Amino acid sequence: MTQSKKIAVTGGIGSGKSYVCALLKARGYPVFSCDEVNRALWEDGEYLRALAALFPACTSSGEIDRNKLTKTVFSDSEQLARLNAFSHPRIMEALLSRMNGERGTCFAEVPLLFEGGYAPLFDGVIALRRPQEARLQAVAARDGLSEAEISARMKAQFPPEKLEQTGCYILENDGSAQTLAARLDRILQKLEI
Image (cartoon, rainbow, N blue to C red):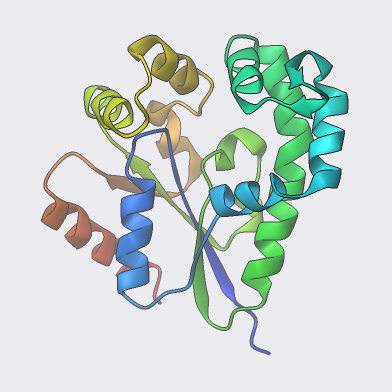
């Protein structure tokens, strides 16, 4: 089988990763998602038992309580680091396994790519950058979170102003959907795919 070319799509919460991945799918590319892998892990009893053992204060009736876990990790950076150290390697292993089954170029939506040090696992990275106010509005509308909750998540993510230091392709999401699509197509040309 031909070795696949793996490209990560990343960016902070509310930056437009899912929209760009939908554009890539519409262009015929296979697209994978860390969120999909994570959802599958939340169906795995062994994974949930290990998570409950790691975070016993976040359980109800012996089962992991997702809401308690979310509140705990986004209010305590040490707990967030513990969760990420447990979940991220498992998510990335499953994601890369899925991508390795593809021929040619495929993409993956990887929200915490730089935070986890996973960029070297990919042949290229497209990072979305969007003005903070637009991100806040998008996440509030999508998830119903308060500005404080969204800000706490943003603070735990890679700073968008440091993207130039990563060597990735930066996709500015500060205009219309048509502008974003045209900018994506220019990056795809640079990636020579």
